[in-house]
Image (cartoon, rainbow, N blue to C red; front, side, top):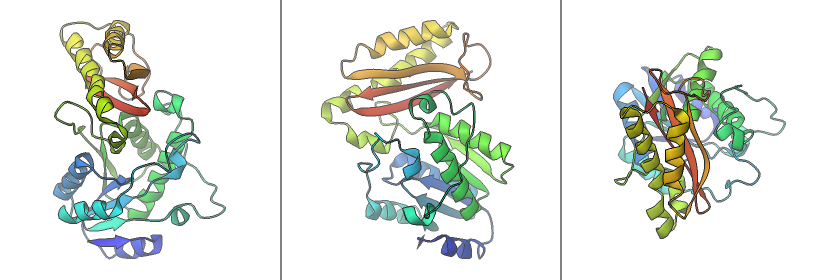
Length: 278
């Protein structure tokens, strides 16, 4: 496994490689969800590259950039165990040198859900992914379905800018009680961790209602809201039933794929999760 810290070195190594490169961009503090992406990339490509970079431009002024969990030694051990070929670990200065002044904005799909509550977040995501794609030049890049809006944004960006790579979306990896794996789960204390599965329970309720014939989005959202409100530690940021491609809110859930997504704060920790219907 080669650990690379500069763009010049990454490009030099990249052009020495033959065969397809599968790429997994991460912010580190790896868990089974990340490793599932690595394994999928390993299965489908000749070379697997993983980036570890806590991207400052996708954090808002009041968000947890400094507190974001980090454990580089553990991350490298896990990636070594998975037989990862390349790990790209640039510094902030390497990715955003002085006088950096170019940004990638994906409109419309970034204006809803997380984009509405975190202005500028997806500009940071789109910009760093563009930079990483340009540096690594992968044939495929792997993302988890848990961050569904991010997946929509990246797919749209890749299509609109004619980027020559495939975006592969891998199903959400969950704990035994349904909680979606996330690096931020470490913020939850014991009582909050017990409360956290309420989000997946609400999503599961939405699926059951739909399977039982309910198509009215407001009614489904209402039932989800009522269930989450039974958990004293939970506070709802949003609940959405939207077109899975455009993220426009739906009134009826019929045959088109519908993304049911929600953000819930458990204590001070914001958790996001989703399922797809149809």
